[in-house]
Amino acid sequence: MTTYPHDVDHELVEAAAEIARTRCRGDNHTMAAAGRGRDGRIVTAVNAYHFTGGPCAELVLIGAAAAQGVYELETVVAVGDRDRGVVAPCGRCRQVLLDYFPALKVVVGTAGRVRTVLITDLLPESYVWADHQLDAEEPASPGRAE
Image (cartoon, rainbow, N blue to C red):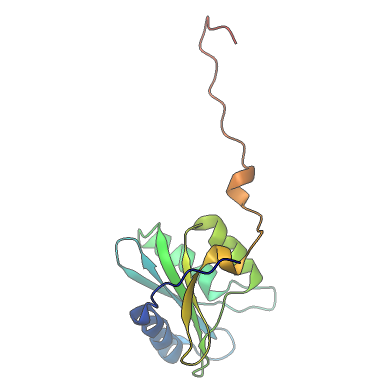
């Protein structure tokens, strides 16, 4: 794993922490996430826990960002309710985040020792969904020899 240091986006961490403090209620919403778009906008979301495997806050964040016209996230962070602080994404979220945003930075770490790493550092030797998609073939032009 190759780790390159990146500045921690403290404003983003605070945005997620504020959502965790004010919007996470009970067992259904226990995690908050915040993401910064390429244009600088911050988008927030909470998880939707359900015994069937409801989406994590990071996955809800992808949809919330798209709904607000933020299609390119540069950095994300997840924060737990009850002042649990920064929580690293689960394996499923790591894969989805990598597939959507291969250059994404993710804030990870614990109390006072947070750092920002590339999503590829959190999922080394990973399967990259886009690498396995077939390119649409252009139809042959009439009269052109193939």
